[in-house]
Image (cartoon, rainbow, N blue to C red; front, side, top):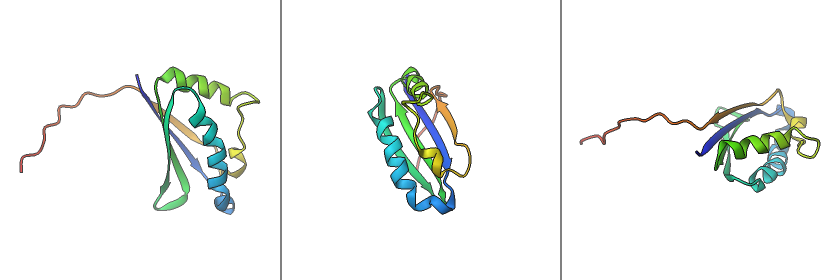
Amino acid sequence: MTAIVHFEVQIDPARREDAAKYLTETLAATRAWPGNQGIEALVDDADPCHILVVETWATTQDHDDYAAWRNTPEGKSALHEILAGPPSKQVYSITMPLDLQPSAG
């Protein structure tokens, strides 16, 4: 089943100008990982230092394999150098069936 991962980071305001460079370097390896189907980085309208990275993975296992690699010396990125605090991550792979009807009108 497809997995959607939300990876949230808070950039140190003093390093905001470096954010695109660091995210590009980090996420290039993410995008190249087997099973990654796409990545988007969204900037919070109210706080330009708050970034939500949305990743789509073919399976949860693909993401788990990638996450394990990120915890190795070879997979470690330099992104932590510009963060104001620890990132947060949520993985969504279970869907809730909804009975939504088109609105009449």
